[in-house]
Image 1 (cartoon, rainbow, N blue to C red):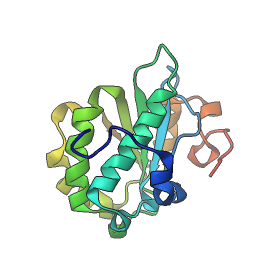
Image 2 (image 1 turned 180 degrees about the horizontal axis):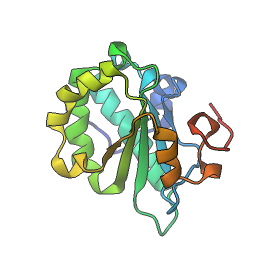
Image 3 (image 1 turned 90 degrees about the vertical axis):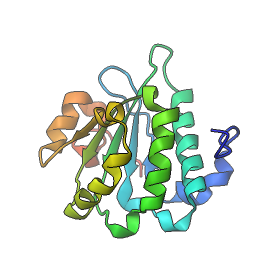
Image 4 (image 1 turned 90 degrees about the horizontal axis):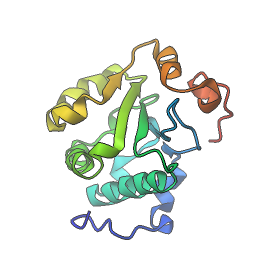
Amino acid sequence: RQEFDCVVLREEEFTEELSWNAFVFNNCFDKVGRPIFWLRWGKWFPQANTERQMVRFFCFMVDKITANMPAHVDQYMMVYDFDGCGYSNFSKSHATTLMPFLQTVFCDRQYCTCIIRLPWVVNTLKSVVMPFIHPRTAAKFRIFGSDWKEKLKELVTDDNLPEMYGGSRENNN
């Protein structure tokens, strides 16, 4: 955290990133009570910031989620939604900087990462990123195919799943 100056992070430092609505925490929880952090990669623009700024923003978002966890919960769930994602939403330098950081700093906090709507372009880029992911972290990834809505419903109740993901909860952005 110190290497990327992630000790004190303020929301006003990330107004541009927050305006993209790529990272969403809308008080949704899985069936065990873990908060769900939605990452919509098609709305992420790596060329708009440095690797350092991206790591700081991820750290800010995870800190925000973990600060609001119920007392009995110590992990969160992530959903990576690749809808609308292409080459412009990917940066090898960002990925190779972010992955080791997340694995070191937040590995035990992450319950699982569900990957949905993975287009062929991103599926191809997966081979670039996977070598940088520790096997323990890779085991937490669940890549869902065309049945992704049903798979999400196995983990999340209908009232905690936004409509855009097949649930009954109102989409708030």
